[in-house]
Structures are given as structure tokens and as C-alpha cells.
Length: 320
Ligand SMILES: NC(=O)c1ccc[n+]([C@@H]2O[C@H](COP(=O)([O-])OP(=O)(O)OC[C@H]3O[C@@H](n4cnc5c(N)ncnc54)[C@H](OP(=O)(O)O)[C@@H]3O)[C@@H](O)[C@H]2O)c1
Image (cartoon, rainbow, N blue to C red; front, side, top):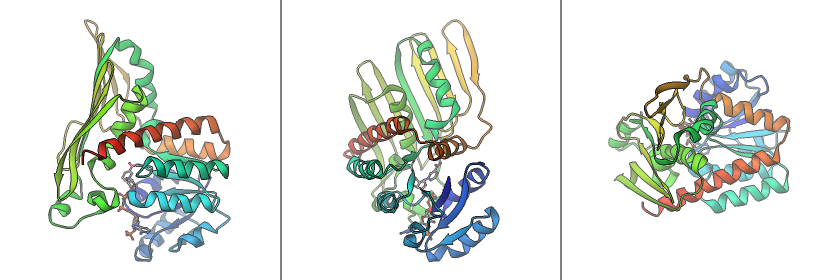
């Protein structure tokens, strides 16, 4: 995969050491605004990125790039992904994929027509410990309750309280706890249990943005809570409770740490340790594989899942 990266912010800084070490990924180019030129030059030197661009059209007309990674504020994902697809590039977009179901449907139509890859970079769906959870659900008997909690005092919260609003806290840029953190919980819950019958979002609002909140998802025989906070620390984890026992995944729902199974009257066992790799490793290995060897059936399943999550996100937004 010859990758062009769109953005030079926090996630790109974190992703570069990870993706630069994946053998099937060549860092063909990176793009950001002219105000980030210095940063681009630093990244280029440090990770041997072939080219830098501050003009998107120039990057998109570069034949040396087959795939772009959209790592920009949420409200820009749709426009940049659409332009990239229309220019003939495969698209990997950061979470949340786009802001509405209609936007995703439009992107899917272009990708299909042009036989291009379109996927959401959502770490937990590709992590080995996600599969461990899936494989062990049946041991829990009838599953009754699920609690997914991602509570992390944001490094940008103090600035937000002081009036300096970054995109992650800006309602006009697709910010907020639901879009930024609870999206991981929704991917987990919907990935494991499918489409909920009912959903409701109860947010804590500060300066017109949800800085924390709880989504409740009801299924015919199961109740789930998705909890996220950017204004408080918490015991981030995934807990699944059934008639035979419980399963706990330690750590943040974007990383999925060690997995423990506790069966009634039988004690606890550790099903899987913490993953040694950075959380973004598995997804990018998979994306490079999909570019080298297209798998339309797998990609359709991933897109259908992302679309279902977006549908729930849209419903939750109605409570904002
Ligand atoms: N996978 C994960 O674990 C993870 C973690 C964090 C974030 N994310 C996702 O990654 C995305 C980016 O988040 P972030 O925290 O990296 O954001 P960030 O630090 O604010 O960086 C955003 C980048 O977009 C650029 N940008 C802003 N407005 C632009 C415009 N109009 N045209 C072109 N470029 C523009 C910024 O350039 P300037 O600095 O020059 O404005 C900056 O390079 C979000 O969708 C977020 O949800 C994912």
C-alpha cells in the first residue's frame, strides 16, 4: 500500500511509528495545512516520507499514492474522503467514519463504482482480543447486561474550560464524548450483539458539547450501557454478564487489554494477556492486505457494520 496521510495532528503523530514499521506500507506522502509545514518536514525526516503536500489536489493527482488515510477533524472526513475516492484513491478514514448514514451511503456508491477500498479505521474491530471476546461469549450462558466504559480526562479539557476549543470539543466540527470516545463502545456492543431495538443518549452538556454521557441500548433480552467521559477519569473496561458468569476486558475500549472469564462456582481464568502491539497495528496490517488482495465480501461486512453504528450515532444525536 502506497499511503498518503491527510493530517499531521495528534493521531498521526501516534500512528507514524506504528505504520512506518508495517512492511507492506510505504509512506508515499503526507498532507496538512500550510501552517503545519514545519511539522510536516519533521515527520518527513523522521519517518522517511517520500513527499509532503500542503495542497490536497496536488496530493490527489500524485500517481505514486494508491490509498489515503483521512486523519482530520471529524467534520472533514466526508469531504476529504469523497474527493479522494473521486480522484481514484482507496480511502481509510479515522473514526467516526463520517457524520451521517447518508454520507456513508454516498461514499460507498463511489467506492463501489470505482472498485476502490473504503474502510473505517476503528481499532477495536481488528484487535486479537476482540476475537477472543467473540469466541467466548457462548460460555456466559444467556447474556443479560453489558457495560462498556471509556472515561479519560482529556488532555484538551483544561484548555476547553479556559475557552480554547479544540475540534474534539467543538460541536461544529463533530466533537464531543459521543463522537470521540463512545463511538468505540458502540462499535463493540453493536459488533458483538447487533442492532439494538431502542437507544437513548443521556449527555452531560457543557458549552453546547457533550463532555460525557451514557448511551443505553436495549435488546429484546439484553440491556447495554455505553459510557464515555472526556471530563473525568474512570475504570475503562468492557464487562459482559451472563447467567453462567462474566467476562471482563481490562483497559480502554479502543485498546482491549487482558481478557478475564469468571464462571459461577468455578473461579476466574485469564483468556488473553494485554496485546504487545500498539492498538493501531492490527488494523493497518489488515488494510495493507486488503489493498494488496481485495476482499469485497469482508469489506462489505465492515461497511455494513460501520453503517449500523452510524445509524445508532444519529439516533443518539437526537438526544443532544
Ligand atoms: N484511532 C485513534 O485512536 C484516534 C485517537 C485520536 C483521534 N482519532 C481521530 O483522528 C482524527 C484526527 O484527530 P486528532 O486528535 O489527530 O486531531 P488534531 O490533533 O486536531 O489534528 C487535526 C489535523 O487536521 C488538520 N486540519 C484541521 N483543519 C483542516 C483543514 N480545514 N484542512 C486540512 N487540514 C486540516 C490539522 O492541521 P493544523 O494543525 O494545521 O490545523 C491537523 O493536522 C479525528 O477524526 C479523531 O476522531 C483517532
